[in-house]
Length: 193
Image 1 (cartoon, helix red, strand yellow):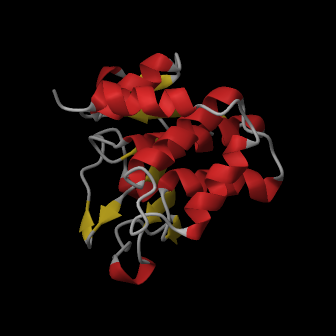
Image 2 (image 1 turned 90 degrees about the vertical axis):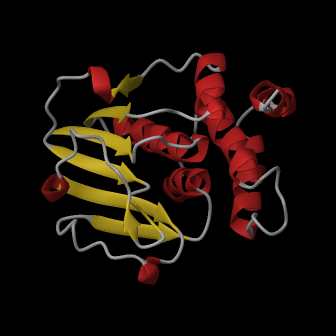
């Protein structure tokens, strides 16, 4: 079965990092899976994918590949279905990972999908999936998730950072050389000039 893990159009770094980690996880189990994004990436996503030399993310605008099923990261926000890449067929979505309050959104457009909604960053959701399976993240994936949590929580601001986000950061720190300069460089490189 050919699986595409993707996001809504114009994804943020947090969404891309979560989807990327999920792609790596499914590869671990030898699934035939690709990761693809469409639309305009935000500046942190563009910079960090280039900096970490991540080239596995397929640009869906350029792809003609057919997929059997789809996994969506970030499908609905504030009760509104987000724009999805044209390649996605909602009847063949098998899993949705969203953040927020599950009861606040209507997922009836995705009748075959297993739904996961958590009140934490997408990167925290992905990190917890590795922790729950006792699998090790590689250096690149750890750095991507670590930086994405910082960006998604506005540099760990108290009102945007949950205890689970902080726990994910502590876990990620044990899986890599602390990327403190990488986080700083990301903020500097993506600030409006």
